[in-house]
Image (cartoon, rainbow, N blue to C red; front, side, top):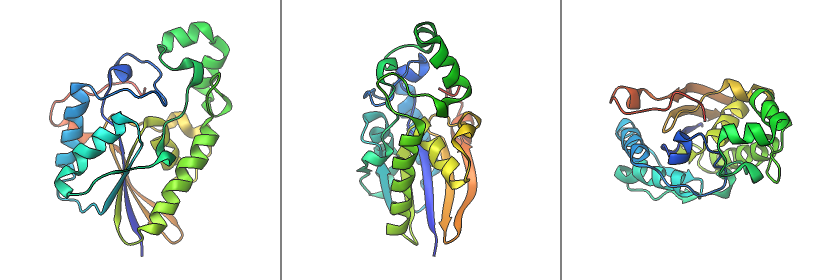
Length: 213
């Protein structure tokens, strides 16, 4: 059998909009982010979802609750989908980090897999944790449909794992707020049905950030 997996990014937050590093800091959805989540819920209302897992952070958890409300299921927080920890970069604007850590910031924008933010975690560490979690859940719910609501970094790593891409390809995957990715776990690997689908947001005329941050 196979397992259908829906991977969604959480809705917009004030820190997304301000290009502020978030990571494991708990920032709530803004009003636009809540509307994005409602649009994702509408897009998935006719899709059978058997179970949902979410990062424990409120921006992902609230998005998951909005998306799954009409399905009558309660999203389960899972530490495997917690965001990358940006350490000392957390709470700082991208431009400030570029001034304070110019070498590290330049590497982050070009070769992020080679960087550990001061006091933070690496893409490799987050990949191992998150992809292992998805593989375990796909096996546990074989034959069903899982929704996973997480973060930009986590989602990109899950998709890269499904595509068997190296971490150096991280900059080449885009994840908009409340995008929907559809993949399928089969015996021999993964089938990719769609990546970064934000048509439900664009078609509604709702604001969507034009930068991958």
